[in-house]
Length: 452
Image (cartoon, rainbow, N blue to C red; front, top):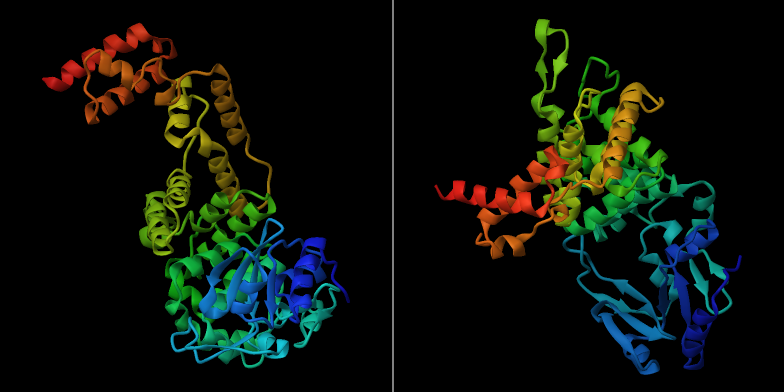
């Protein structure tokens, strides 16, 4: 089988060939080509050592020179190229004690993680090389460690998360010896940085079969190490209208988000939205049903803790936590227009759709796939009607700003911020108040009250 090679990559390979070296395309790009999946993330390997590579090209970057990786800038594009290498012992399940450059592609491919990632393609002709049965495992949708699974995972514990991630992304199943080694070595995942774990976990959650990927983590013990809060939901009974355990409910909600192709914040919120129920469950009246008062806030707090532990960005953490803390909103037709406007302001216009998506996933995981309830549709129509009026919903929409408040004698600082919030509250209650004359008088009156 041959891989189609672009002209730019063929030209890159020609530079190596003319200097007496070989260049190969390796890993995921070759795998995905065989699977007819798009992948523009190309990795290359060569028998040229880093010093040789730097001499061949005018512009290079020492991306990981210690481990034999140089980024070449060629025809305006960046190509990451690594010298054939073998690695010494991994004393910390993360970093090799030493790296040795070799002249054999076979030796280089032996150090890779799974058979389906150990393909190489000769350049420039694109002939695919399979030395570890990767084609067989692709055919049978199997993830199998190269050689001894224990050794592969001892070299880099993150490979266990990668196995779970690939199982979700590709819809493959993990071979039993590989899975057994993951269970035996699951505790070593704690040696891996939070950032690397988060990257693999997020890809798993965004995959085509997150249920299996999560179950791999749970059954091997990996989930106990990195997401103990989610592990606690397994077998946790909810009762009432919930026929499933809490864990099953959360996974069903995530699958709903996947089926609708909802954005990543909704997928994350779906998986964690009820996680706090494990902390707040109490007997209801008569001892017949459980209650979970305040679980939305506790779930938000726990998700905040998880995201901080995984070192997500502040924006991502705050966005998902905000959805979870507000997912139990309750709309009734007797809401006034100002109540609808307050809801929009509190949630944030940029979060409204995601919050509704989360509610759809929560309901789907509770009652099964069913049409969106009329009540939710009616609320959406009310919100759209308010948005069409173009009334003020944020401080930026007010017909007055901090500059003007300063001009009329109000000092910048917490006092000014509080006044602007009060003005917005007034305008949300009565949109006709959004005029400069009213706002200036009201601002001065508020400032005087604050000074008393």
